[in-house]
Image (cartoon, rainbow, N blue to C red; front, top):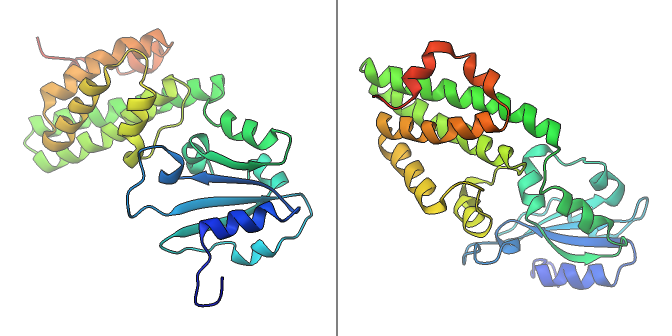
Length: 246
């Protein structure tokens, strides 16, 4: 490795394995999920250092190249949840390359796959309300001839819906590029993956209000079963606008 030879994934693994200051390595992103990577995918690698220890790899922290993204994080900061919440899905589906922490690193990453029950319940109520709001607006706007607004609201509703469905299963919502992979490898309980993806495609492409209402008819009983009657009932008679037409 020289100034004209950029740092590679293999270089970092080799240097880390020989450095006692490094206590862990893990990959996030496409390279950590079997079958998701393409010829354009790089290695998103985290180097985890012992608390208070120094490593020569620190000078490469923040490296961004076509082949390698590198972050160097002390183990105490990582385990203290210093990383932002939007990284949770990436951490949940990460792949551990090296763990010298007695398993703490691996356990921490695996723990990201499940949301805290109370936090999940509270968040589900919030995103259920947001989903209903966007659906309601989409149907009304299209009814009133505001076609573009109706399409935009329909697209918004899908984001909230996905957040809801995964939160109801106490899982972080996957990034959009990972959605199909996630559902194929880890289906949502009570949902047919192919049918759900097909419905989402139709709504995003057409904003068809009948399709949106039919989907809500599947969501509503699942949300009620999970204890979210109040969030739904607070919509009162407006629920009829979201439900399938008789």
